[in-house]
Image 1 (tube, rainbow, N blue to C red):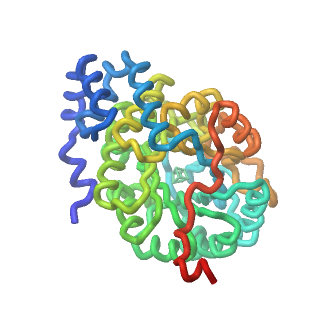
Image 2: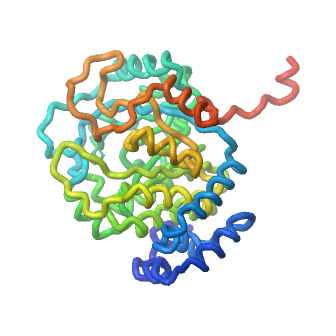
Image 3: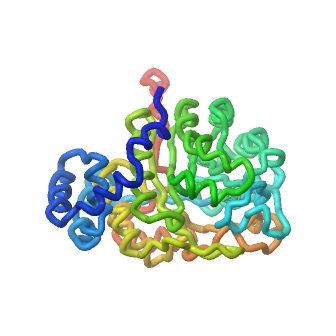
Length: 381
Ligand code: SF4
């Protein structure tokens, strides 16, 4: 079976740049016409990420809005993250949990993690995302499965955003009750990736890049992808992320594929952002994704402000977080008052988010998928 890393090699940076530079307003309008009822190619996606498309952002936004209404209606699903450990052995240059950051660390035991999760459930959340640093000796698959088994009766969906696992480990966690997995590749530029990750298991670019494929083969229901925008030239990583989702949709048609659009923001440490992404670029990215992958979910986290998130929803964002803390503990157990992994810019609670969505004409969805209907014989009994 082919893998995405091989597929991506057919799209070297120079080839992407050539399409981006060649695109003009005529090409952008042609692609927007095709997007109304047709299927876009990766080349079309590049046209929508080009400087020429930025000049026509209003027109691109109109098409994206139409497609969002057609495929998702006026519904936005809500989830919240639960950080269970900030112990990490990696040295990602852009992250506040970097092992070189000399701060006290907190690792919840299973009972503490359960208490935090139940506090979240009591707020009304049905979708929870468990996050850890990369420290297998503490946050092992067995530890994660133990938490999941304790809380699975309280949530409709339990996702994980953890280090890259083997296929057997994904199957083990799915068996325990995990139904979705998010994996940020951070950047799809292998040389830049090597520089950003000088030490630790995350250094293995290929193992991380192929993690979604392993989770899909293991039977995961839903996969989330993303690049950390700002590390690499915007259009380069935006294209590679969309291409990754496009490829996964074709390889694993039964798996729900979604994308996240995180922009790097302030953290503990001293990382200089080389390729800051503007609000217009972020909006263009959401629109281009919606046109290229009309049925893919798009997640926008609380890295973005309430204003930005409110404005991105009509363009294609289908899932947002609420009630967010990126620190470990604090809801039902002690925390160390450490800074979280990153600074959040939207601290709305579930109730505030639901109310604001209603004000925008959207309905907040807490459980966005249903178990299959029982067989008729069972239903009648
Ligand atoms: S990004 Fe993740 S793996 Fe890297 S230092 Fe932060 S917590 Fe650890």
